[in-house]
Amino acid sequence: MSEQPSLLLLGAGPIGLAAAAEASAGAIPLRCITTSIDAPWLPNYALWQSDAARLDLTADLRVTFDAVDLVGASGRSRTIPHGYGFLNNTRLQRRLHAASRGSWQQGRVEALTEVPDGASATLDDGTALHARVILDARGSRPEHQGPSLPAQTAFGVEIELLAGHPGLPMRFMDWSFPTPQGEPPSFLYSVPTSPSRLFVEETVLSARPAFAIDRLRERLKARLEGLGLGAAPWVAGTEEHCYIPMGALPPAAGGSVIPLGAAAGWVHPASGYLLGHGLGWARDAARVAATGATAAEVWQAAWPADRRRMWALYRFGLELLLRCDHAQTSAFFDEFFQLPQERVQAYLTASGSANELAATMWMLFAQGSWPLKRRLAAAGVRPEALRLVRELSGD
Ligand SMILES: Cc1cc2nc3c(=O)[nH]c(=O)nc-3n(C[C@H](O)[C@H](O)[C@H](O)COP(=O)(O)OP(=O)(O)OC[C@H]3O[C@@H](n4cnc5c(N)ncnc54)[C@H](O)[C@@H]3O)c2cc1C
Image (tube, rainbow, N blue to C red):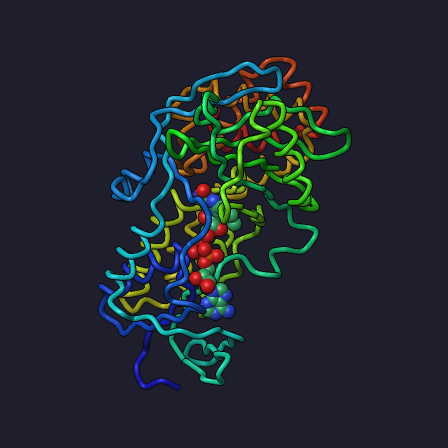
């Protein structure tokens, strides 16, 4: 066993690095292990500007938009007045590495074991590292990826606009492309990254089992043809294959290994986003861990009771959306985005309380149009579940 109670952190993705930067300012010795210290973050990470501002990351955005568009199944477009941006991964990664003051060591963790005074990580070279608390930010885990857990899948690529084509605006979701019968609906996400380039991504918000990424590639090609963008060259090296397990339950309490980030099921069950709320949650948990707090206290910081309630409500919404077809999903989002904008924003950024979230969900149902109510009923929304949401909402 190690002589000193210490903190071990695993994984240098956005969550691990944010936690490391925070914990390295703390009082207890910190060690960080990851498979490849300098590996660049490849996804086109995006977040809402309100989150970026709250996290002091505004300067780390590389492309920004004051508003985003939503296009329904009918082709009607609506503007959502919430600022959005693509993260400058390299810049944030460098900044967080600098702040974590060389605590990093390269290694692959093969096994984690609970021991009487903490936990032990066995690396691929046979080294065993003991710590009182281990923060595990190694990303989503194989056990999250069984067929019973829904997943978001997407295929994206950056395209070069041909001269004369105006491209597309920043579209958060475009549901206007028909879905083949019996397959889960997908939407187009388009982000102009420069005057001549557009990032386009075809996404199935969530499906059980996960929808094949190859099929999304085919759908994207067909959609681009329909939009007059079929001849636009795909920029080499920009393909994004996205698989995000959704709706994982919070990890069990009681051990000395505390998962953070995707490993902890922090992915927003309704959207698949994580960074806007997760970077702040990672900082909070790491700050507590760096005081020498017990594993139970760190677990509480990672999963406060209200957050667990909130995630249960989002999972309820996720189950509902999983049963919706193309028209139902599009109608759901169309009406959702007509709610008061502060509610929309709180829902998307997971920034309110569980009761506020329940109130928003209840409002969507109670004030929703009859077609939406009928669609939700057809999708299997149960009266007892609605009663629970209504009670939580305080209505
Ligand atoms: C393609 C894609 C696009 C996404 N886009 C967005 C987005 O725009 N906005 C958003 O909010 N969310 C997005 N997400 C969801 C989520 O934010 C990401 O999955 C994010 O990368 C999760 O961060 P993380 O730090 O928890 O885990 P990861 O980024 O997966 O990092 C895990 C780290 O652990 C290390 N590691 C893994 N195994 C071991 C091991 N055995 N030993 C040691 N180290 C190990 C890895 O090398 C890596 O450094 C996206 C996800 C994907 C897949």
